[in-house]
Amino acid sequence: MLLEREKRVLAIGGAAAAVLLVVAFLVFPALSRLKSLARATKTAESELAEVRRARPELERLRRDAAARSAAVNAAADLKESPVARLTAILQDGGIPQSAVSLKSGGGRDGDTFREESFEVRMENLTYLEAVNALRKLSGKDLPVVVRSALLKSRYDDPRYLDVTLNVGYLSPKQP
Image 1 (cartoon, rainbow, N blue to C red):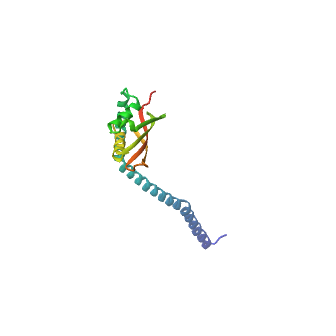
Image 2 (cartoon, rainbow, N blue to C red):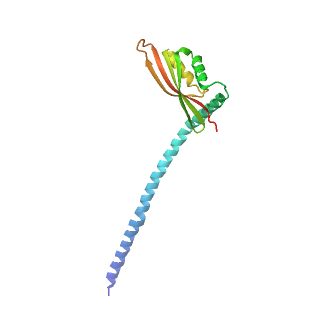
Image 3 (cartoon, rainbow, N blue to C red):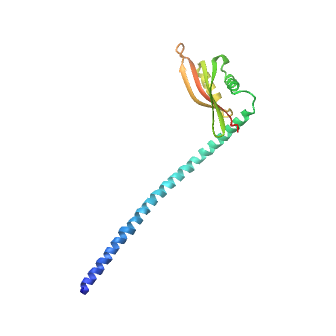
């Protein structure tokens, strides 16, 4: 049999081992989980703050999209073809019809709109005329999206440009 002293030492040792096991298997994982949750909370708070900062920009973009959608729907009521409409827009911008050539690039359907792409080439434009043409085509009241612009100075006279625009003409998607 064990002596009283040995029994106490075993009891104290067992209690110490139990405390170590509780600390190792319960306390340390709980503290680790608490730290990871604190990090996740900080991350979520920073993302929420970012979303709140972005909200005015998102609202502005939503309003712009609604205005563009209204322009597309209003243009759908016009009887002109997209080519005639693009030519008229450029002529309103002061570009002579003889300097403009349009080439169709086909169409594609999006979620809510159909986009017909065109390659618009304009030759012998001054810098001001090129800027006016881009400004006219980028207007919010038009169903036109400028996808890319290539401006090259003329080899014979660097005061003039040759401009190539890839333009999308939007129309409501037909069911």
